[in-house]
Amino acid sequence: MSHCFVSCNTEDRKIKKALKECVLMEGSDYKLTEYRIVETILKSNLKDSISSSEVSIEVEKEMMRMDSLMLNKYVAEKEKCLLQQQNTSWHLKSSYSSLIRDWQKMSDEKEVELEEKQENIDDIKENIKGWESLINNSETPIIYYVIKHQYILDEKRTERIVLLTTEYEVL
Image (cartoon, rainbow, N blue to C red; front, side, top):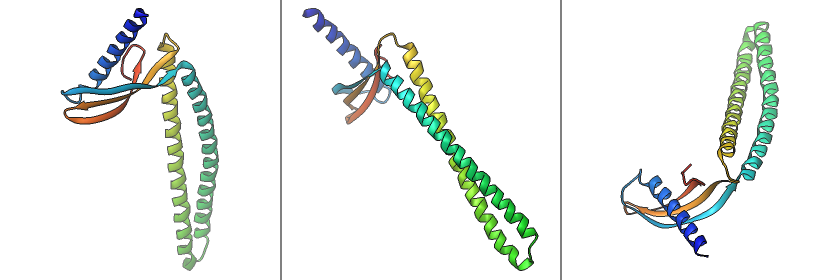
């Protein structure tokens, strides 16, 4: 029984030390109010997140394919209006100019949507790489702890969520 108590006490000290070191970069007068482990993230959790994220990537890619088809349609319609504008009487040319601007605006908006979707895919891929790195570098089934950390720093009460590895390093 005493061995478990000593082990838990050692773990508690290491957690408190890591939390303090994390915060002391922002100030000097630190006092821990409370901390508690609110979640333990396991390798299996991250593997599930990777699988879910890979599905999200495929959904985004499919939406990009549909957006690309729409963009191609908008460009073709604009080109068609340009051609018709060249072959019409002078008093109708301004009507075509308005249509051409509208098709261009829709094309520009669709391009922005495509860029946003690509950025989202890139962000998801970065998350996956990070999770895979955590999984590969972890020797235990536990990857990290989610800790709710309440403290006073330079007379200001603060609450923060901190991710702490099993080696007591802040992520």
